[in-house]
Length: 159
Image (cartoon, rainbow, N blue to C red; front, side, top):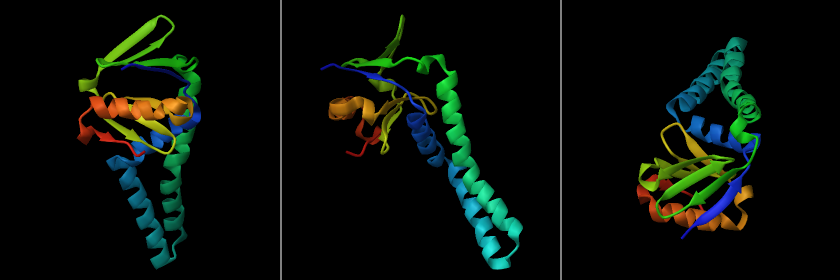
């Protein structure tokens, strides 16, 4: 079975990926916990500096990721044109113009889904992002392809 589709990276899809990736890491979780503790400190002591610091800590990261997503999409030549993906029994190929890269299914790290995208991690920090809006009717076929070729413990995709 083969599956082919094109993906156009948008700031919205990149932001969705960055939020998911960051808030499922220790630094994202710890930042939120520290912000909540600072706000709780304000509730107990009424020192406004705790409230200000807590709000800054909690809101800095999502705002920073939003700006970073827009910059990444605007400044990366790879995101100026759609990426063409071809899923085969052997692996995943991504191409654009004259450049093509292939990765085997065995080397894929994990696959997850968000409300906006299906994300296929090719390493701990790099991923292929498939916005559901670009997939259309091929979404189910992509999920089936990933689920068939990757170990079940690596696949965390909600239907």
